[in-house]
Length: 166
Image (cartoon, rainbow, N blue to C red; front, top):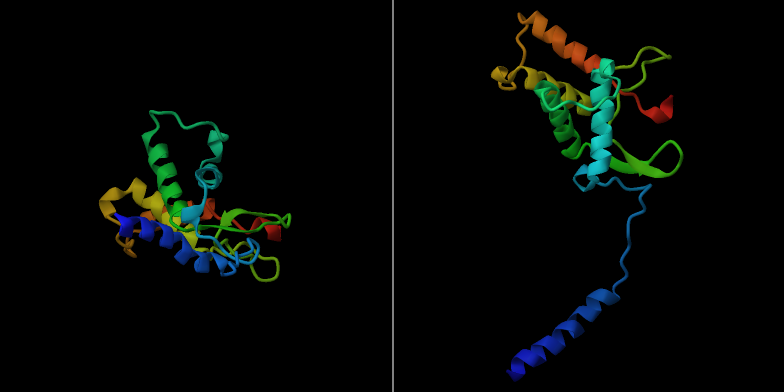
């Protein structure tokens, strides 16, 4: 019993050395924090933004419970964003905020947006394969032009340039 009490007394003394060490915390503007730490609200807001770019005709109205395809696509977008594709970093107004980890790039010499974001490619894949689960995430064959065209249409719809550049 005395050893147990001695151990309980000594344990805090051993940890004093660890506590005495200076701890340097990262500055939010200089470090990227993984999206698995992103609050649910930030993931949901970004998911809404991308979903309603894909379906502007919905005018940002709530998805109805019987609109199962919309629900599946929204959930697929959210999964992509929640898998480390949102980061906490300096935003346009100098304050830090949750943002996509990668945006589409502006074209050379004020050209059109270049569809360069791997994150948005993953979003397009998620939406496309939610529509066609029977494809099992296999690559689209060159002969499947209508499927390739649909994927491209989805990808263009979810295109998102860095808002700080515009």
